[in-house]
Image 1 (cartoon, one colour):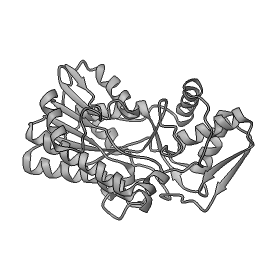
Image 2 (spheres, helix red, strand yellow):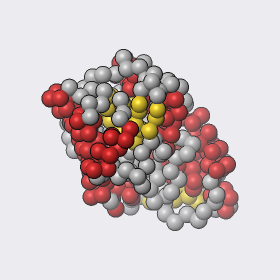
Image 3 (spheres, one colour):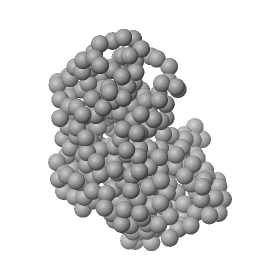
Amino acid sequence: METLLDKRIVVTGGAGFLGRHVCRELESRSPAAIFVPRSAEYDLRDSAAVEELFCDTRPDIVIHLAAVVGGIGANRANPGRYFYDNAMMGLLLIEAARRHKTSKFVATGTICAYPKFTPVPFREDEIWNGYPEETNAPYGLAKKMLLVQSQAYRQQYGLNAITLFPVNLFGPGDNFDLDTSHVIPALIRKVIEAKETKSSVIDVWGTGTASREFLFVRDAARGIVLATEQFDKSAPVNLGSGEEITIRNLVDLICKLGGFEGEIRWDTTKPDGQPRRCLDVTRARKEFGFSAETRLDEGLLETIHWYRNNCQSRQLTSSVSYT
C-alpha cells in the first residue's frame, strides 16, 4: 500500500475537469506537495520540457490525467493530432519516471481503447480482442499504449506503473463546448438553451440505440486516488458504475430533469459510435474497494444546476454527438 502522506505528487491535467477533483481528493491525504504542470510552462509532448518538469518537482508519484480528447466530431477531425499528442505524452512521462526512479506512475487510459464489439460487460481481459470503434481508434490506441509501456517498464525496469480505464465521465465543471464535448454536457447545454430561447426542437446525432455507461467525476477521482494508494499490479483496471443506458433513454432523462418538453430530432445520417458500452467493475471493487456512489440522475441534476449557475447562454452551432 502506497501512503500519500508527505509525498511529492505530480498530477498532469490537474487543472482540468477530472484533475481538479483528483487534486482535492489527494489533499485529504496530506501529501508534501501537489504539482500541476501547465502547458504554457511544460509542453508534455517535448522531451526537454518533461525532463525539466521532473527536475523541478522531483515527484515520488505521477498521476497522468492529461489528454487531448473530444467527442465523435472532434475525433473525426483530429485523428492525427489525437494520436500523436496522447502517445507522446505517455511515452515521455513514463520514460522520465523510469529514469528519475519515481516510486509510482498512475496512467489513465480510455474506454475508447476497447474493441468496437466487446462483449458486455467489458472485462479487462477483452481489451486486445479486436480493433476499437473507427471514429475513436487513433485516440483509443494511443492511450492503450500506456498500458503496453507500463507493463513493459514494470517487467524490464521494475517501475511500479498501473493503468486505469475510466468510463465516460460527467459532472460539474465539464466541457460544454459543442465542438469538443461529450454527450452529457452537450445535451445539458442544448436542453437549457432550448428552454431559454423557447425552442421546440433539439437535434441529436445518431439513432439513439447505442448505449453508454457514465461515472460521476467525484467518484472517478476517488477511484483514482484509491488505486494510487492500494493497487500495485500490472493488470489494467476498469473504473465505472457498471450501469448501462441507451442514448435515447439518456436524452429523455436529461430532458425531464432540465424541463424540456419539445421534440427530439434524431439525425440518423450521423454515426452512433460504439454500439454498446458497459464495464465489468469487479476488479476495482476487489483490488482496492472502489464502487461508484453517485446515481446517474443525482449526478445529472447536480450538473444541470452547475451549468445554469455558471455558464452564460450562447448560440448553438452544431448538433450533439457522443463517444
